Amino acid sequence: MIVSIREPRSADQWRSKRASTDIERQVTQRLCGDWPCAFYFKDVTCHYARGVLTLRGRVPTHRLRKMLDSLFADLDGVDRVDIDVDVLSATGLSSVRPR
Image (cartoon, rainbow, N blue to C red; front, side):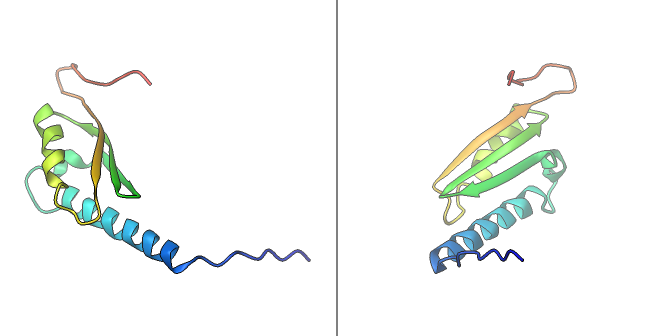
């Protein structure tokens, strides 16, 4: 029988993971909240690590993409917001970059 022993996490690692989860929850609540533009952010996902909030996904207009900048500027613990969100419009024009 093989028994694996996990190294216990330090208190700092637990706090960091909890802070990350709390910030991602706050971001999701703002994106999907009860306001008129929330529908347009359903294709935007978030990831938080070490003070950097990364948003990825698609929105239909440049104005909505710019709105993302101001939505998360006031979150405690977020030092920088990286926005990797493409603009896809119904007219077929887009800002999608080849990957």
